[in-house]
Image (tube, rainbow, N blue to C red; front, side, top):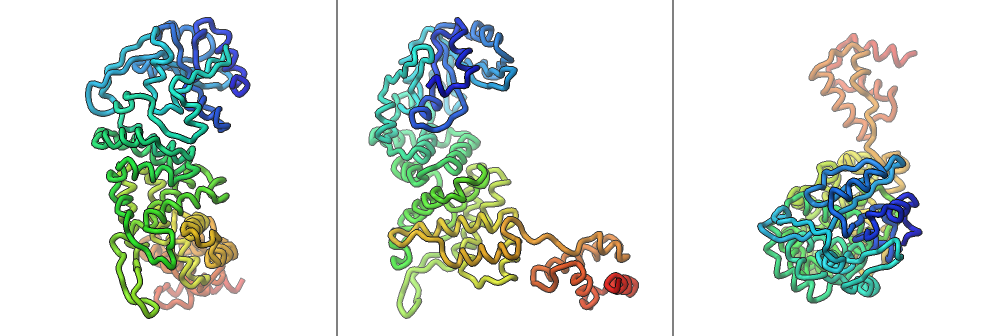
Length: 476
């Protein structure tokens, strides 16, 4: 692992006398063993006190003591290297929530005892850079090889957030929880009420942005019964679907397959983090409207399971879920229109409909919607996992109209009307609004055509002087 460390960090760890018993811990060791890139390095230092550790690290760069109450020193070197170093501590649970702990620092604690405080065995691994030695006290290496998620010790119960960390770890690394860990998570199910909403949000965002097998996290929630804390998701279980179109099973099973399908799409894998989070949350929520709309009704000459209007009904439900987990508005505002428009490709695809779709999706895009639609279609095994022809048609039409990444930009704007002598105010705003609607309808596609539309649109009540000015512009 030393070869994967930045040379400067390797030098600090090897050349600082106070760091003789310094270990790389947690995620950086786990990811190294998995072959996953990780630029975040956490170091736990044994045998020295906090003040002495700060003094030693200050020789290498600026130290930030913002984490002093937790025994953490943040270090930033002149070259730009940043890492956290901490001294071991003993935490005693004294009250609810993540602040309900009595923290006692103990530089003489053993690495094995320190590792026992970590949540899962795969995160309890330690690496000694001077001895090139991995310390594995609790079977974390075997658990990684066997893709098993197992709690390290009974200390797991002291912070219920660890269950949601288990959700996103299972999804990121394709892990299946050990039965004893599932049972322990059920035992602390009531601890969800202790969690600060921002901590819940952070685990959901990691699930949405970093998953490789998202269904592993969702099934972990179901197995531990923590899915009950997310009623919109829990309501999907047992909701039947027409077996001809959904041979895979109920809506929850379908949602799991859809999320996995999205994670396999190159367009999702190469997107920026916010867009990955947005699309994954949209796929998670795309059928939230089905529990309320699913019914038996005559269709194609026989009674069938249908869910009319579920996409529109799902919008407010998705919004409630996103608000409950404190999703940032920048993401929430993108997710909801994806949910309410996820069947738009089944409608006639025309210039007009695609322009209006691009506008309805704002601030999201048709490119993002097509990822959601494709995942929805591919989440129905054993039906073929192919991109629907209707999605390909929508993509082609959006490309031709140049609206894949945004709604059409207004052609006729307020400054044009001011130049024609229209005074700023409500009338001008009303004309601009009507002009944009006409543009979406395809009544004009450039500024000259917009001016012609101005003259011909009698309802605008354009003043005679303004009409003459428009004609003079057109006659140039």
